[in-house]
Amino acid sequence: MWRSCFRLGASGGSFPRRPCLLPDARLGPGDQAGPAPGLALLLRAYAPPAERKKFYQNVSITQGEGGYEINLDHRKLKTPNAKLFTVPSEALAVAVATEWDSQQDTIKFYTMHLTTLCNTSLDNPTQRNKDQLIQAAMKFLDTDTICYRVEEPETLVELQRNEWDPVIDWAEKRYDVKIGSSTNIMGPDIPAKTKETFISLLASYNMWALQGIEFVVTQLKSMVLSLGLIDRHLTVEKAVLLSRLEEEYQIQKWGNVEWAHDYELQELRARTAAGTLFVHLCSESSTVKHKLLQE
Image (tube, rainbow, N blue to C red; front, side, top):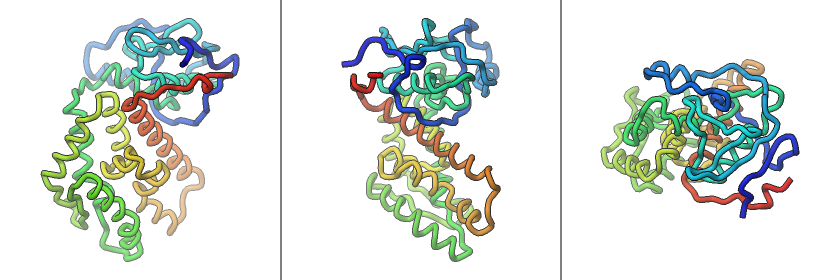
């Protein structure tokens, strides 16, 4: 079983370090201001903050009555709206602590994907309920990236068919639905039964996991790819590649901007990976083994 409090950072933590690139995660330890009075101000509080000089040495986790808390030295982490930063699972707490521990001389808030998703779940800055979250994700089904097909050139038509059709076939069999594809600008006509099935599927997740699902769907612009990823049918790399298939085709044909393409690709992979991990950590009861906490 895990220790009630463990440290990272100055003493040399043992958590795996992975790069993350997500906007927004505002620190709360020294901030006492309460929530802004209007929704516009609430949303403004979630705008990407500037980098900040690192002010702590050690990161630790403690278990409180409401869940797992993150401590920066002896100060408890707070959300942008000054709520106590508390997460429901030990594994998620470890992942968030890793983000904070991985910061060097400067805290780069835009690299802290999981912290951001936790802040959004805790503060709910857009004040959405479960049904609204589900609808926000479902709107991408009608405009799903892999359901829209080109009519020419033939090489791209064939590429889309070879790469996207197997994923649609998998989803149709996995969830017993009909999805299809279309070259019409309006996209395919998704049956009502299919939508009902996916709504029921999303409703089976808790609010935290739904925040992550909507985030992933927004990154990939595809409900089908997102479900394939979350259901472990696709890897992050494959899902991202399929979401950018036409763009990658054009790059292969015409070339790309030297550094911009690689940066955008890695950033999208990082955001998608973080969102997927967040869904799983919020959906499963997982315990971090004691040996992972050893220095």
